[in-house]
Image (cartoon, rainbow, N blue to C red; front, side):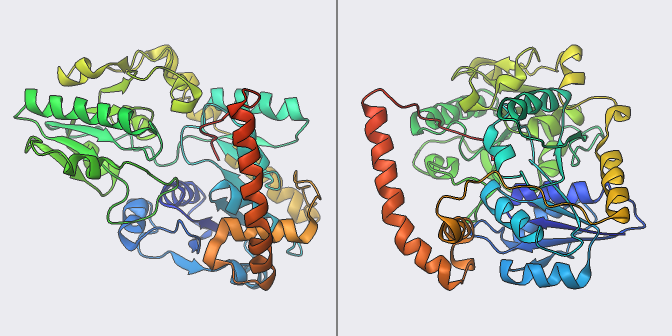
Length: 413
């Protein structure tokens, strides 16, 4: 058996490689980084692949070369671990391969709230991998409301390391690029970290970033914490910025702080107590309703006083710490491989409408792959679609200003 994980941004590299590593050692397994505007730097790639078994072995591939490569190498399984718009394009391309492989996709971390976009972009995957019983339930509701036929399966977050952290004196804050989004809220987070550092001079307070020096991330970031920190003239010396693998940061952690980062699950797995900041409330936009009932919410004072908590036992089983006997994604994959062995797998329908035809498809490809899409039709679509999209966005803003629209700040893709 051959399996290929197609990845793009840092978080999807980490997830895709770790999921691939769960397949049998007897399989030929490979990671390929697809060229997109969000492709990771060499340092990000190394950090994301650390401990996966694929360190230094990931190959680069362009979208143009992908179809030929899959036709020649004939993998049995392709894991499309990419952001939604790019995943949609790649799944459509792979659907054209004769006797195509089993197509697997999913999301790289906490996926509550369940959104229709996450399913919409992955409609042509045979299997959608999720990571908690609650995620399975909520995505089934979303799919059911729209009459969609996604096959959902349960995995354990594949990069979870259950080795107890050695422990240390660091307070580790996991940066998220879009949560919270606005500058005043991010300044408030920084205030909390500064106060924590001042009140605990014997402890390092670590702002754990995922990108440095212009590196790309899964989501674009405004108002980065290093930039905000640099503007402050009297920051404590024990407040530091660090990159690299999250596992290394947790090794020396006394406690962990987040607004809603998936790294909280890594911290729980390694026995590191934590605070999930509720300073800005609990809402889908903050990606933190999943922590209701966990006993982990706390404010800035809890962080500064080093009052970290451990999750409620009843919350764990429904949220990422289910029994391994409940995991069924590899069984679902085996079923699909058996079907493929008896006859070519049918093409799953795209959920996209036909309005715009080839030009619309070219626009979507250009939007997802940017300069890495060198097709002539993509250039035409960009020239036609950019002013049309600008007009549409202006109309939407006008509707919202008149109170007739609703702005979704965030949609998990």
